[in-house]
Amino acid sequence: MSQKQNPLSTIAPWDLVACGYAETTMHILAHYAEEAIAACKLKRGASILDVACGPGTLALMVAREAGTVHGIDFSEAMLDIFR
Image (cartoon, rainbow, N blue to C red; front, side):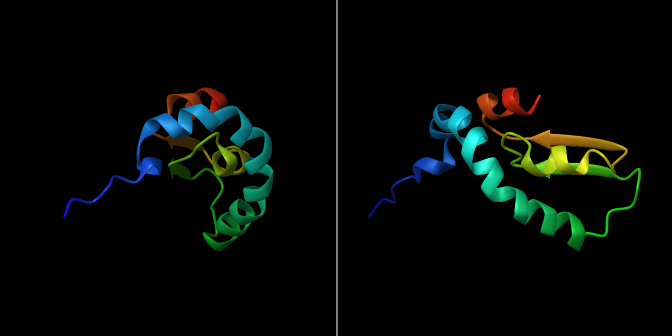
């Protein structure tokens, strides 16, 4: 029996929803990003890598305190919004 690939593990769906995701989901996820930032006890000037950063919800919030922030995502449309 072969397993079906999860469509959310591919780039296409994320590229398709990038604009709407940034407009709606970023606001919903902001609270969780704030909690994650608080939990990591970020030191001013730290280097941050946000993996699967999407449109940059967490990365943009932490940029005020960090020395450098890098975001990676497999969706170029999400990265375009992040930039």
